[in-house]
Image (tube, rainbow, N blue to C red; front, side):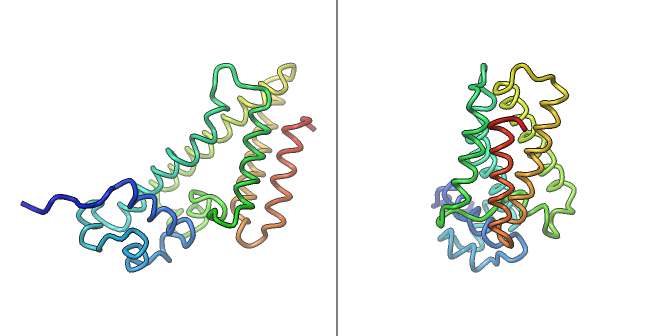
Length: 191
């Protein structure tokens, strides 16, 4: 019988999430993960099965603790007409914080070699669909007189701008900020 686990799994996952977000899956070394989490390699493997298991737990944590709380107002019933602008503005503000990781963990992963993995690709596609649906709901609340086709196009455009901003945040932060500004402008006045 093994020793009982002596660490808080959620705290370990959050610490690892930061490393994966900052460095990417491939670049995050086990010594760096051990340092960040305060947990030894054997304990990580025992709790998560592998580095990939820890990464998968970090992705789940990212969705549950970072993405969905921010999207939640777009799924309220009814959706506040200002929710979509508030959401986009909060994304831009988070990107300016020096203490925040750059871009989006999932989009960063999608553009890495791990993005070709079928399970990762599915999570990224589901995330993009959830994001687009939330934006669609927020835009419909903001522009109730617009037809569903016009709202769907606007939601697709705003989603594309967000994904562009997330994917270029490291290499072109000013361009990413411009993409976010355009998405905010579209959500504010619809044109």
